[in-house]
Image (tube, rainbow over all chains, first blue to last red; front, side, top):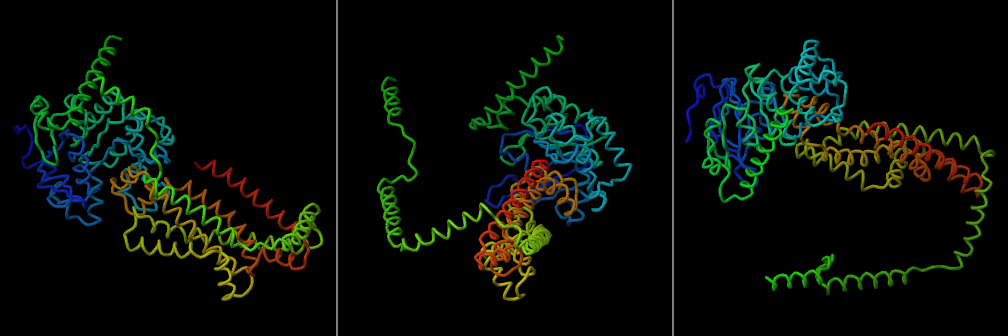
Length: 286
Length: 272
């Protein structure tokens, strides 16, 4: 079932999870010993039904959620054992992109992008927004890259969903990360914008040799853009392989035949994928 | 099939929203009990109708005085009282805000560790459970008559008000925005400055302005027990039966409160 992948695992694996367990105070086990190896520059999609632990998994990696046990090696350092200062330095190397964009709404686009630099500058510099000139220049470059250079002084809450997500991407990239943790980047977006955002994320990862873990509901969308898919079910990895390997049997294994809510999810995904395709055809016909 | 549809029609006809209290017996008992208690409570009030009748005259004299308030004969006293009240108001609001912000941060469960949270909630509870007049009497007893006791009273009351509401606003923030700032590797102070402050600032400004006009009104009240300000002047006027001067003072207070209200409304609308 687990298919070997070119470049997967091996000594240059940048992120290495071993026996990662997360048990909530209520006793629910969200993650039951996850092992995962992510090599440098690989974009990986994490799929699975709601409640499978996708969101918990990527939040454990930068310890927004504290894992209960296990090891998480990032470039030779066990993130689980880091103290406050070490954790801050490790977080700088992991950019995060969120489902609801999570921009600070009352700050401007520029302030939001520059907030990605907080791990690198002292408090007073950040308080007075006196970021190093090189960082400000990089922020403008990134805004230009995501096509929002003229919006730098707008307040974040004035932007549309797709624009906000682009700002979110710029904020993650200005951290100069090795790894992107991406949590449902397209769940709040329409199908066309979803594809644009996914394409942008994947292009940027390729340009900068970034590894990325992308939580995503939309299986069809994931298959379109990534090299590797990991299926999570009830806190366990049940599939790890290429997008082509996602046969109906495998999808049933991930989403569960008896789990009707999840199966309906899949149908919704397929319906949405069909919609995307017609959208594409319409655009192609134009 | 037809059986089921019949059933549905029957159900639809009989459907009523569920009552607030499910048991009919308890419902009626509670209603009846409340009515009886109310009747008994009214019965125990000793109403001295003669006293009320006599008081009407005084009340009327007061109403008449309002039609011709006397700003002139005690103007120096009124002016001094007002200035003192305004000084007390501004000073106590500023002191109150400065102390409230850290206590408010500590009293927000989502950002403060449990011991800090309990301590700060404790301070808030003490401040809120004591009414201004009681605190004013206490401070007057310690520091003597005058505005110092008033300033301390109002600062103390401001802490309970502002920290509680600030803490509740912090507990209501959008977690996602704060989480995103934390994920960048920000320090605690940077997290406060980027993740929390932008989300609660408009409310903090609004609450501070609101507290400013509460403090002005309260400064008139605490004056009645000797804590300085326009309240002391008002008290003197009543003691001398100078209702026209008292009327002038009250009209002035109403005027100032209305101006403050209007101004703070304008500012609050702009900071959203």
